[in-house]
Figure 1 (cartoon, one colour):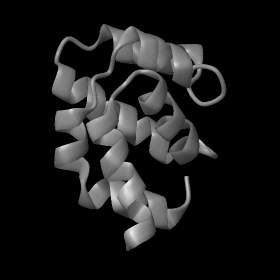
Figure 2 (figure 1 turned 135 degrees about the vertical axis):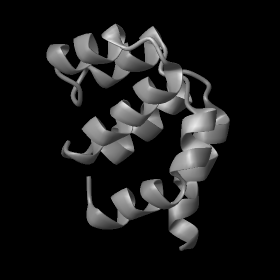
Figure 3 (figure 1 turned 135 degrees about the horizontal axis):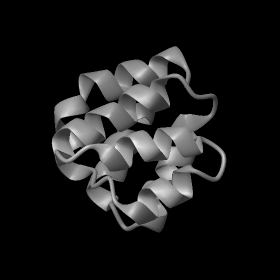
Amino acid sequence: MEDHQRAHIEKNLATLVLFTSCTPSLLDYLSNGVLTQLDVSRLDEMDDDVWRTNKLFDILFTKVNSYQILCEALEQTNQTRALEVLRQINSI
């Protein structure tokens, strides 16, 4: 993830955590190119949805091309409110 993308997420993290559901289908999509099996296992072990979503973003900060793939995953899983927040990066 590029620095400006990370900054955009950090600025909007509370909103993104509210609108992002760390569902099995989202994790499955992200595991095809971004998340490792270990990443998914660690997220699956977490009981609290807010903590899980925060941890997901922490992991994504360290991955190459994760911003674009996250956008695709949110679109595929119909998480349009979170996707709208991410797409606002172009208006910065």
